[in-house]
Length: 335
Image 1 (cartoon, rainbow, N blue to C red):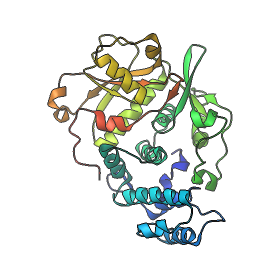
Image 2: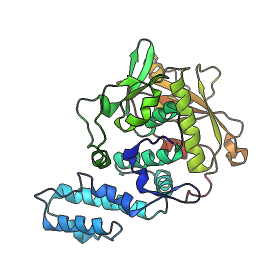
Image 3: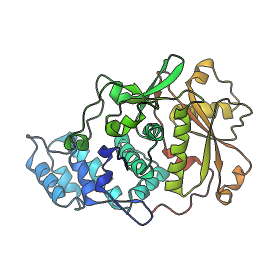
Image 4: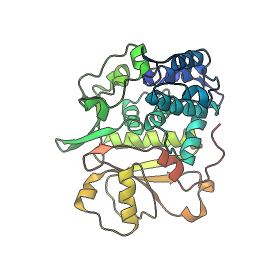
């Protein structure tokens, strides 16, 4: 079996009988390696003591006084956020349960970086054994912002952090620890170079063609089907549409903030500007195969998913909208 996405830390997690990821001490220690928490040379004794204690026991309780004793104000803030996140993860037996509970109550002030890290490792579990590089690259949209560009009549998505001159986020500590290579030249994924995806998957340096009617959007549909099956035990068919003919947005889900705004405008009967139309990247029809779980008010209505980019051609997918936006009985929480 080909491995991929080593930097997400999935090797540090256990799996239960249902195939869900069990939170381990080793996984919790990843956060202690982050530059925001690793004490610098000038760190005070209180911060160094706290860091060492958590390395020895990452589930150790931490009271407010210990954080308040840290001299540096930025460090105090970082530790408060990190301990709250650690407590959330430790309170749930599986990573999936921690994620679903988080998005159902609203992510609030949770750092997007932390949420994306959970999505990354959950998707690694969801797609375990997948040998289709197109599905794996499409799934990167769930947790990696993309910059889109028109090239030769095609709409190409490239990883924003990879193509930017200055990375806005620190490199994952696992990338450094595993000695993974830095990003190289960006190629558009195709049948000829697909085999190279696995050895370079942690570099996020392969672009994806998201032109309507091509393989990229279809691959994203497959990733969404597997996401729903794993997190909600929900069977669904997601069909990419090439043309929006006879589309009634009685029930829709925006897969990002821009798509939600576009869907709201259409739902209210507003005419889209040409600019707004050009921002639509993908349109999907979702069919729920578990009819008994569909809410009564949604019975008989097609469910549409909209994916869109911003005016400056950035795409920031919000996979939590799939979890919270479907008109279904959510069932028992993932354990």
